[in-house]
Image 1 (cartoon, helix red, strand yellow):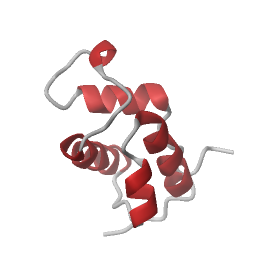
Image 2 (image 1 turned 60 degrees about the vertical axis):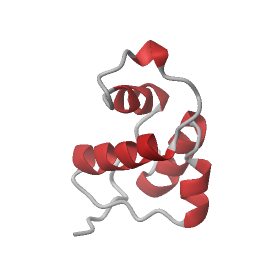
Image 3 (image 1 turned 90 degrees about the vertical axis):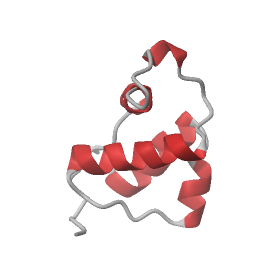
Length: 83
């Protein structure tokens, strides 16, 4: 089920790092900039669960989500930045 996402505020860097850290119950301080494919799948799932929606990411957005900063940017495109 896809929900309207224009009213959502995308997670910032801190929230993205916290979601990545929840994969494997890691300390957020140990999360680097790179995101591997399993972490990306986990992050997409965590965002979908947090916002109760299904993300529709194109290939370009998914490719940019190989880093924390890229994930924050792509999620802002999809969810909005609250402004």
